[in-house]
Image (tube, rainbow, N blue to C red; front, top):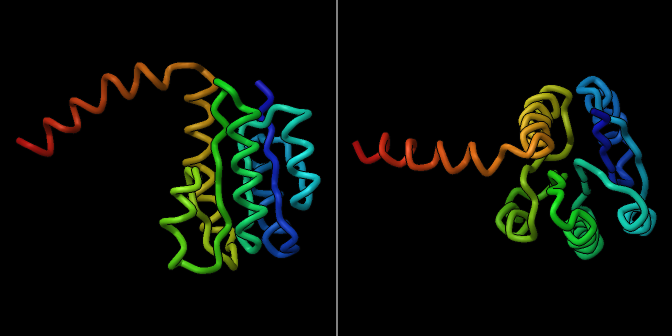
Length: 144
């Protein structure tokens, strides 16, 4: 299974850290700016989309296009964020994960390990069964 990621960022440091980490998880990596990212989402399927929120308007458009392009195939989304106060709005826009800038290799490994696991679950089509089985079990544990 070839998983593909789209990294939309102008931040050279973030791209330099994230590209080898993504490749280390076996993901193909395409890196570009905002307008090119929106075009690529219309042309190709990506399993994960990582978008830099330095330009919140453009980043929101990228996330919106990622969800429209996925149409049934869920792309896992990761937002790169400088301002921790904006985390709620980023999750509200549809990000599944957040990586804070400046991006360190250690944080990238931890976050992208979780994102890759979610991608694999979604790619195998078992997410609904896992969630349906685990959510009631977890709820009972909290109550009990």
